[in-house]
Amino acid sequence: FKIMGQIKRGALIVVEGLDRSGKSTQCKKLVQSLEKHNVKAKLMCFPDRSTLTGKLIDEYLKNKECKLNDHAIHLLFSANRWENVDNMKALLDDGVTLILDRYSYSGIAYSAAKKNMSLDWCKYPEIGLPKPDLVFLLTLSNEESLKRPGFGTERYENVEAQRKVAKVYSQLCNENDNWVVINAARSIEEVQKELVQKCIEKIDEVKMVPLGVLQ
Ligand code: ADP
Ligand code: DGP
Ligand code: NA
Ligand code: NA
Image (cartoon, rainbow, N blue to C red; front, side, top):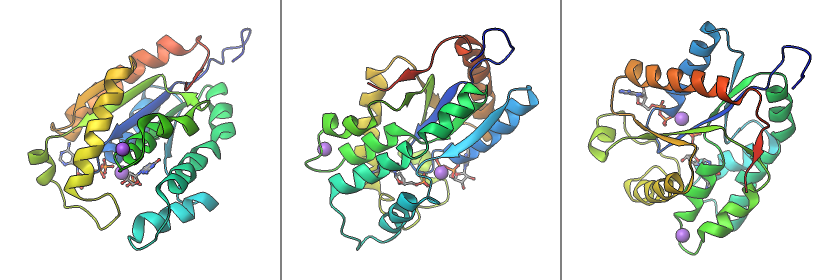
C-alpha cells in the first residue's frame, strides 16, 4: 500500500463452515453490502473449479468412483489456492477487500477428517499463503441443517463426513485468535447484519497493517 496516496490495503476475510451453513448466500450479500458502504470488495470461491486444477477437483467431488489418493487430492486443492495467490495479493494491495467462500481451513478440515491424514500434514501445503485477517465460522446444529434443502450428491455431502469435519473446524477455531463463531441458524438478514458490522470494523483495523502469512 502507498504511504503518500490514499490507497490502503484491503482486508482478507474468509467464510468457513459445513455444507449448507449459508456461506455462499452470505458471501454474495457481503460483497454487495460492503460496496454500499463504499468499500471495494470482491468475491472469490475455493475451490475455483474453472482452472486446470479446478477441473480435476470438480471431477473428484462429483464422481465418487474417482480413485485419487487422499494426499494427492489434498495437494491439488492446495495448488488451486496457490494458483490464485498473485492475483489475491495484487487486489489486496490495490485496496480491494476479498471475501473468500472457503479457504485453507476447508482444505485442512475436510482432509484431516479422513483416516490416516494427520492434522499437521494437512496444514503443511497451506504454509506461506496469505493469512486471513478474519475468519467467520458459520455454525448450524444438525437439526437446523436438516430444515434446509437436502444434500447434493457430491463426495463429502453425508452426515458422517460432516460430523468429522465439524470437529476439525472447532479445533482450528480454538487454535486461532482471528476466528469468530457465527450462529448461522438465524435469518439470512440477521446473520448478514453481524457479518457486515464485523467486516467494517476489521477493514478499518487492518488497512495500515501488513498482510500476514499462514504458518
Ligand atoms: P453453503 O454455501 O454453506 O453450502 P448456501 O448459502 O448454499 O450454503 O445455503 C444452503 C441452502 O440454505 C440454500 O438453499 C439457501 O437458500 C439456504 N439458506 C442459506 N441461509 C439460510 C438461512 N439463514 N436460513 C434459512 N435458509 C438458508
Ligand atoms: P462448494 O463449497 O459447494 O464448492 O463445495 C466444495 C466441496 O469440497 C465441499 O464439500 C468442501 C470440499 N472442500 C473445499 N475445499 C477443500 C479442500 O481444500 N480439501 C478438501 N479435501 N475438500 C475441500
Ligand atoms: Na457454497
Ligand atoms: Na485424520
